[in-house]
Image (cartoon, rainbow, N blue to C red; front, side, top):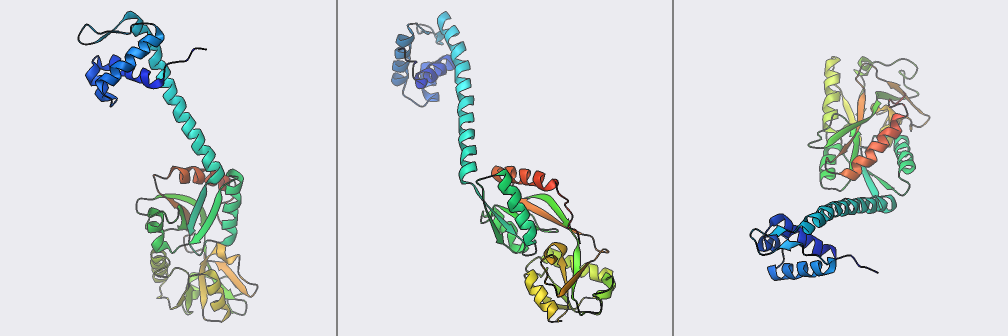
Length: 306
């Protein structure tokens, strides 16, 4: 059975063919000139042909050498292409069997929507391990850049630095009241909140930009809000509403988890919130996952029904 010459010998010979000089060819492949010369002599012995004219400067290919290397160059190019395909295939197999993704999210992203995301990803990536981690909006960008989490999920506006922002869902703000409140059985406008203390989800730490937006909305409606509490979870807001501390303003998604003693109403005068994914531009795996997730979620209505 014949054995093909080792690939390294072919690469050394191709270097000579390209450089037309043994010393320069040796430097280009990072070996000594005697080693390169010996390898090429062995190659010529194996193929039974003289490939180079060594008695001229620069070194020239023989007629047989020209024909030989025309085929070898095509072969090397194909090997490089096939090798890259093999690496890509192996990486894809690794992703399918051992990939995990950590999603850092606002505390006010609803549990039901997180379950929807998990379900969609499990359908698209059977072996993907998915973790959710609550992260304040003010800390989310640094968490993504430091790779403490792979992607972020939060409400705009948000300082996203150099991160890519991918819209995923629209949610309106709601006013949350106890069922004993006089406002529970009537349409509620933003102006109705003027004389009531407010419980807000977007504290200066949890989501400073959204907090400023809420304050501006109140001023535009002609009043300065009385902030009773700044909460870091929906459950904390529900508890305070039940205790009659004030009315809460929350994204509509988390209101779906409200207890029976709570009523909530959409504030239609205020522009809805946009829920977005944040990711690093250089994270190809996150891009692949989010592209397929976005396609899966696009099949459903992106606006939260309130």
